[in-house]
Length: 331
Image 1 (cartoon, rainbow, N blue to C red):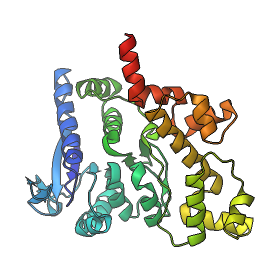
Image 2: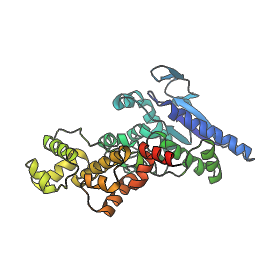
Image 3: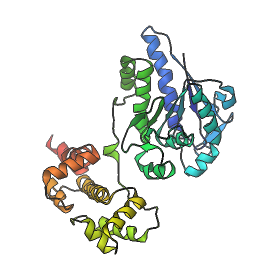
Image 4: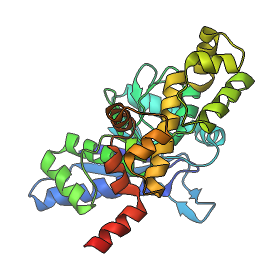
């Protein structure tokens, strides 16, 4: 029997608490239907006996408090909401407990921005991690020793797991279910819950938001220029000259301030502009490419797919409502 402990964080996201519980209790029923023994004992664990969520609209009564769990096999750390500093402070009691359980052999799995609580343990230092793409910059600033993988749906760092944003955690839940049972049970669960299995990237959902939480006015000025002139072909020398900096100094300060190289930043801004055009206009791909300052069709397509996981045409077919209506009229 595998003991699964799902912590109930203050300011926790209720779905990220309920869904792993539902999946692994349902898995027991799948196993029984196949003539096998139930494998999981699933419990909600809290710092106290009663925890209010959703601005006091919901009260959860955990099965056990931390001091009542002497040993467990797998700990789920659900997503948290609201101010991160306040959430970490209000959930401090879980940090020491998770470290102790890990030393006893427990595995840890964070869901979405539950990764912040997992990283607070220090157990992720030097290891790979996934979290919601929108929280990536904040996460990197707080935990520079953790190797955050951009766009990843799940990461497996030897008994420490994490998942990407929002509903991406279902991929991790199915991954762990398969690990503890078999492929057949995981596929059955994916069909029952109508969830894709083996999805491996958040890329097509990601929106690039330039890092602005810095005080370097020259870099702010260069960011503004890049974002307002996406159609231009920009060089490092040109951008450095505009803010009266030497090229090497400009490159260093830009990387320090934004977390991106200048080239990476330009590319992400241009591709974000292309995405918005593909979502909202009926311009052809070449027109959009030229609007973003690119003239090489293959280079543009390859870069777009590298960043989004989709070709420009695939992206338009997926997200453009005008295109969807046109398809419906043609059917």
